[in-house]
View 1 (cartoon, one colour):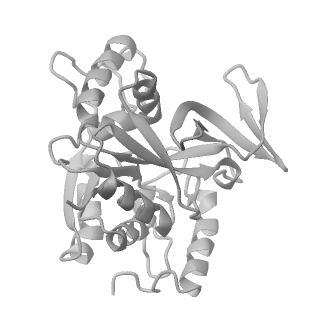
View 2 (spheres, rainbow, N blue to C red):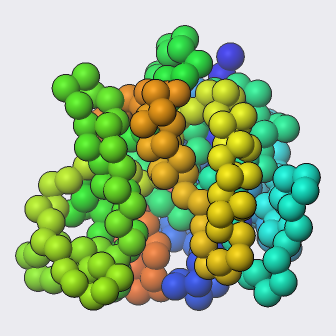
Length: 300
């Protein structure tokens, strides 16, 4: 059974200021998602599922349907604020999405095979998809999941703070703990975490960071559904509270309900968090095209 690629693309990108998921960065107008899907196809993925808002549907279909026809199966799933479990209703004034865990949960009816879930606006590198596909097609344990780790200082932006899940790994290569660190900046050669009270913690930059590229089995959906209900009971009246998938994974590890193998892909990572990041991304992709890693016209 070929694994599925689940692309989380429902966020508007408030810091970026627009629909960055389809922002052109390649030499012929390709978006980062184009490279994601291209790498996934050659790694052996059989289906791509876009998690989007319904208001984005026309833009996504125009961008992807024709070029992907005959290359990979495509499905769209909408993530909306009012998509809540029975017994819960949308609080008045809620505008912020419920988070990445909710984004994955809304795909439960269309994803029945092992799957890789990742961000739409991150370039993970071709080897990330290869090691992930190899894991998803070889791991027979329904409670064994995976993630691809990246060195923290290679994932930062020159133009503002970023959030990262900082990981602790044991001698077996399994994830032990994730600390969701919401405000990390570069200051010269230093890497600094700024806490909510504005205090600062120095980091080495060599920490293993989760960039939200995860390998899951369909068993995850039952756990997600139960934990999302618990989250809503505790956090529903907080208009900015979100449920992050790294936090769910850590809970499952802590409860001994799952193990997570940390995969090392030795791939470049870069992303578009701020508009100022775009020229850097365009330059990086052009260098990969010039080196023969990708064709200049990706889908020809």
